[in-house]
Each structure stands twice: as structure tokens, then as C-alpha cells.
Amino acid sequence: MERTLAIIKPDAVQRQLVGLIISEIEMNKFAITAIRTMRLTADQAALLYEEHRAKPFFDSLVAYTASGQLFALVLEKEDAIEAWRQLMGPTDPAKAGPLSLRRRFAIDIQRNSVHGADSLATAEKEIDFFFGEGV
Ligand code: IDP
Ligand code: MG
Image (cartoon, rainbow, N blue to C red; front, side, top):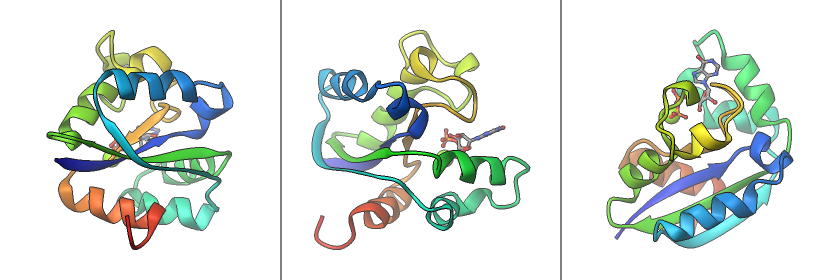
């Protein structure tokens, strides 16, 4: 079993889509092995997205990510990293397939409702970021 880190982002929490998105996670046979809700500080959001520091959208992304409550989840399944990214769809919801979470729920390319780790190394780093040792 592989594990990945998923986030239900502030735009989705604010619009009360948490239950719907968790239903989709379960219907797609991911096991949820850890979950927490929190609001990130701007410094924490900047750390989470540090790979994008040089991008023009970085400051806006950090402000949005720290703008409200989010839910972080550890999901387990065979090929969980790729399977969760498939279920989310591409970053830009306008380019996402009709059944993907981002097409169904995202507002725009920034407020795109869900996050997923993009590699094994990133998944472990992000799980540690949200859950620390012992998960
Ligand atoms: P990902 O979330 O699909 O892995 P990344 O390229 O890693 O996409 O970007 C991280 C996050 O930054 C995206 O999910 C989105 O919230 C935001 N983002 C990415 N590209 C843009 C953009 O062109 N404009 C505004 N926000 C963006
Ligand atoms: Mg990414």
C-alpha cells in the first residue's frame, strides 16, 4: 500500500464541500488513515509551497492557503499518489475531466479545492509537515 497527503483547501471548506469530497475519497476506495483540520499561518503556507517561491502567483497562493480552515488527510491505496492526482484532475479546472474533483468543485486555477502530493518523497515530506512523527 502506498500513502499520499491530500488537502481539502480553504475554498472547499468554506463552501461546506468537506463531506462531499470525503465521500468521493471513500467511494474511490482510499483508506483515510489520518485527518486533521487547521488553519495555516502565512509562514507555514509559504513552507508548504516553497517550490513555487519564484512564481508570480506565490504571494497570492500563500494568502489564499492561509485564508481559512483546511483539512489534511493521509490516504492509503495501491498507487495512492497517482490515483489521488487522477481523481483531483489537473491544476487548472478548465482543463480537468468532467468527473474530476477540480472540475466539479474548483472556483479557478488557484482556488482549486484539493491538493495532492506529487511524488513519494513529497508525500512523506508533506505527511511529516501535517502530522509529524508517528504517522
Ligand atoms: P498542483 O496543486 O496541481 O500540484 P502546482 O503547480 O504544484 O499544482 O501548484 C500549486 C498550487 O498553486 C495549485 O494547486 C494552485 O492552487 C496554485 N497555482 C498553480 N498555478 C497557478 C497559476 O497559474 N495561477 C494561480 N495559482 C496557481
Ligand atoms: Mg504541486
